[in-house]
Length: 67
Figure 1 (spheres, rainbow, N blue to C red):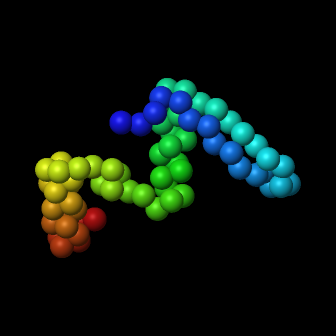
Figure 2: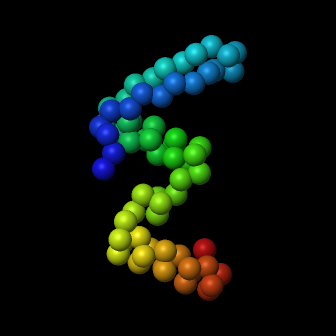
């Protein structure tokens, strides 16, 4: 489960520091986009049987040329 609040910090094109805070859906979107930047996939956050089922399904679709 993800935190309901998130703060992101970065630099704009001019090199000025920027900081934005978000709650609820915006916090979740911030965290999702940071995952993309870090190279984290949604299956990396799953555990147990759910992860195994999805990984198997992806492999099957890949073999069929549909992924």
